[in-house]
Length: 434
Ligand code: NMX
Ligand code: MLT
Image (cartoon, rainbow, N blue to C red):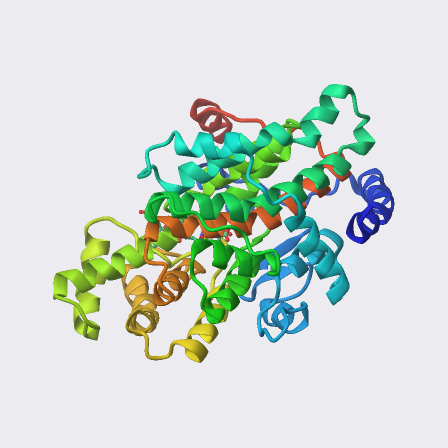
């Protein structure tokens, strides 16, 4: 058993007892109310899920097991000579609540990279799809093809006791996360590089190896991948990708089937797909104006055109946040350090100055500030990753770390099938009339 799995195993029994006594002592305690507006309003703010790995404060943003983004950037182990946290360290933190040392992180890198070959049937499955199939559809299909190797599914069929569920869920998470960069790079190279695939480099950490397999050998891009794959990993339990993974997992569908569901949710333009939409919006503006950095007046006109035609400004607004997303700030800091004069970054900065006031005047969005997706595209383009449709795949590879950590805890705590009660509009109307 690895040190990580041993640590996790030692935490499960005390946590089960803690939850059991909370339910026994306070089971009837009310934590949230549900209004008619909540029912029709996507349940914003209704406390109805338990997720241990992270929590989002509307003003401060994400905390991973209590640690803010500046704190994890400071405290998580880095690659030799690197300045960004390694996603391997975040995985350890999300699962255990503890900051790992370099040895623990090395063990995770080795674990993720040891079964790195992509089975032939997975390649065949992807190759059966037209190369212009959206990369997120390919990612979801690739994950489903990998499901053939699910240890959870096999052990469930063999008759595993409930108390053991977390164990193969953890093993599946390790194998699946280890293979995701291979799937992502395979999709990228078949979709955009004529199927010229690049073999993994066994000497690299997980994120740097993904950068390598994409075909971008710039050390700064490796650093960007480490940061990117860390900060996109988790955003508490109610976001669509986390919630979908958790919901499907509650049927005891294995981690592959569950993650694929989460990835399908991430592929929506109001969720992760917004990152490709942001870059598309910027390029569209540039094309219409004949290139270069638009003036503030020109950008303002385009922003109002977007709003007046009934579309959203991608990368702005949020279901929970009410301030600038700290993940946006982390990417902005990276850009200020490494690409301060980049043309697209200049436009992203101008949008930061303009959009919040315009959204306020527009008067609809509860949060006029940028979210994580407003920034990532300009960084990726800078290093040569210019295929916007691929961006959400990187988000998905990262998100797997968070949602699969949560899924392991779901199984460890024996969380049941999720099945809320639905009501009809007639029922609501008659309740309101009484
Ligand atoms: N541009 C224009 N209108 C907006 C925006 C925006 N960026 N954000 C919210 N609104 C509108 C929203 O469409 C709604 O309009 P209506 O009443 O006509 O339905 C109104 O403002 C109230 O929405 P909110 O309560 O502020 O936002 P909600 O919680 O429903 O949705 C988002 C949150 C993120 C879906 C929404 O802000 C949005 O569509 N943003 C643009 C897409 C985006 O950036 N998504 C990525 C989110 C982060 N991620 O990776 O998942
Ligand atoms: C996320 O990272 O999942 C997004 O910011 C959306 C959310 O939290 O609802």
